[in-house]
Length: 163
Length: 163
Image 1 (cartoon, rainbow over the protein chains, first blue to last red):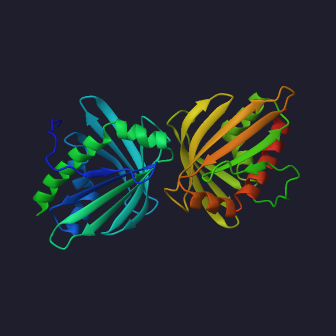
Image 2: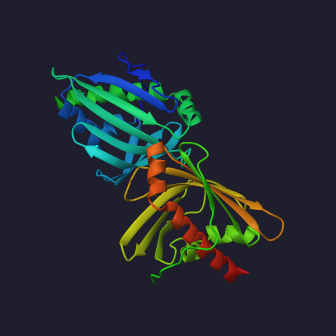
Image 3: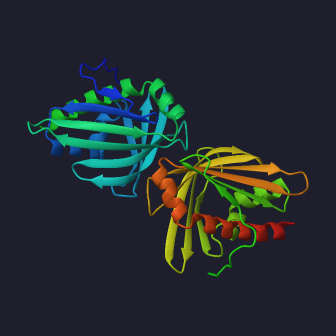
C-alpha cells in the first residue's frame, strides 16, 4: 500500500551537536515499554518505518552482532537498508549501524535512547554519527528530517493501536 | 594449517595522519596488476590474509555494494570479519568497510591504493578511517600493525608464486 502522508503536525527537534552528528529529539504519548516494543518488534516496525510505504523485513536478528535488512517499496522503486546491532539495553537504549544500498559502505552509527518522562510519555533521542561531515551534510540534504518526521507520525499511530 | 610466522624482515611504514586514521605504506616486488590480482581474487586472498591460519571465505561479492565475509581459524578460535565493497577501480584503488565480529557495528572504512613504481615494484597504501579516536587507538593496541606485517610477508610469498 502506498499512501501520501501530509506534513506531520508534531516535529522532532533536530540539531547537529558536532560536525559529524545529527541529533533528533521527539516526545511520544506512550509509556517507555510500549515505545520500545513498537521500535523493536519487526511486525510493528514494518507498520511505521516506511511512512506508509510497504516495508519488507528481509533480516532481523535482534541481538548484539545480529544483522538487519529492510527493503522499502515506494512508487519510486525499491530501497534497501541494512546494518548490524551493536548494543541493546532494553527498554532504554540501542545502537546499530545503518547504510543505504545507494551508498554502500557509507555507514552511520545510530543510537536511540528512550527516557521515561513519568507521565506516560517518552522522550526519544536519536543520534546519528557519520564517518565524515560530507556524509552528514548529504544526509541532511536528502530530506532525512522530513522523512523521519513522517515516520514518527506513523509511529504515533502505531502507539495508539497498542494503547 | 596453523603455522608460526617469524617477525617479518620488511615492515610497513605506519602513521596516523589524523586522530581517526591509520595509514600503512609498503612496497611489494611485483608489478601492480599482479598485486591487484593477489589482493582481490579469493583463492589468492585466502593464502595470505590469515597469516598462515586457515581462512574460510564465506562470502565474496567483488563489486560495488557487494558483501564479503571471512572466518579465520586459529589455535585461539574462530574470528569472523565482514564488510561491504564501496568502490572498486581496477587495478588502482578499492575501498570497503571492515568490522570484526568481536566488536559488531564498529565499522572501519579501508581504502587501498596501488601505485606503479615503474620498475616492477608496487607501492601499497592502506588507509583505515574509524568513527572515533578511541576505536582507532583500540585497533593500534590490538597488535594490528604486527598482524598486517605478517600478512604482507605472506603476500610477498604469494606474489613470488605468481611470478
